[in-house]
Image (cartoon, rainbow, N blue to C red; front, side, top):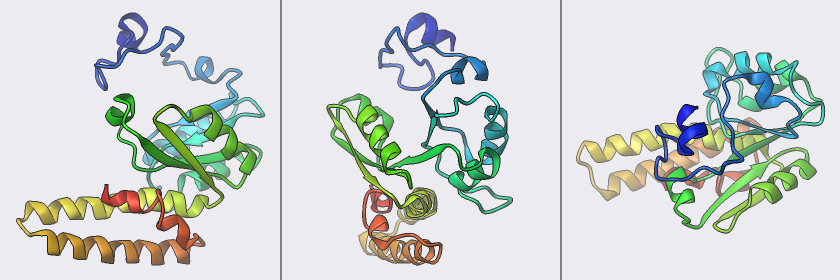
Amino acid sequence: MRSINEERVNASYLSFASIPSSVIATGDLGTALRGAPMVVFAAPSHVARKLFTAMSSLLDEAAIIVSVSKGIEIESGKRISEIAKDVLGSSYSFVCLSGPSFAKEVVAGFPTAIVAASKDSAAARTVQNDFSFENLRIYTNTDVIGTELGGSVKNVMAIAAGMTTGLGFGSNSVAALITRGLAEITRLARREGAQIETLMGLAGLEIWC
C-alpha cells in the first residue's frame, strides 16, 4: 500500500508500471467499498466466503460484483458465484471476468481478449464498457457456470501439461493431454449445466495459452 500511495508503483507486482494518482490503496474494507458502484473481487477461493461475509454490510445496494477469482471452495465444491449467492443473496449483479490475460502483457499493451459472463446481461455490458481499453477487448455471455468452471479446472490441466514437459515428453504427449483434457473439462462443465460453446471459447481454450 505504501509503494502504491507514495511511489505510484506496486513494488511486489508490475513494478515497471506507473499507477495513476487517482488510485488509492487502502487496507480498510469500509473505505474501499463505500459508495462503490462496481467491486472487483480478486481474493483466493479459500477465503472468498469469509471476505464476502465481511463485505455484506458494507456494499452499496446497486453494486455490481465483478469476480476475477479462479477457484472452487474445497469444503463445499461451490464456485465463486455460488458462494456470493450464499452470503450476499441474489440482490447483487454478479459478473465473472475470465480469459487468457497475463497482467504484464496487458500493461505492456499486447492485444488481449477476455469474457464477462453474467445472467444479468446489462451488468455484463457495463463491465464490458468500463473495462475495455485500447488493447483489451471484452466479450460477453450468460454462461457463468461454464466460464467459472473453465477458469478453475483448466489450471489442473495446465499444471499437468507443465509436468509432462518437465518429464521430458514431447509434443505428442502434450497434445494428447491437451485434447483429452479439454474433452474431460467439457463433459464436467456440461454436466453442471454449462454451454459447450463457452468451453470452446476464451474461458475454456485459455488453458493452452
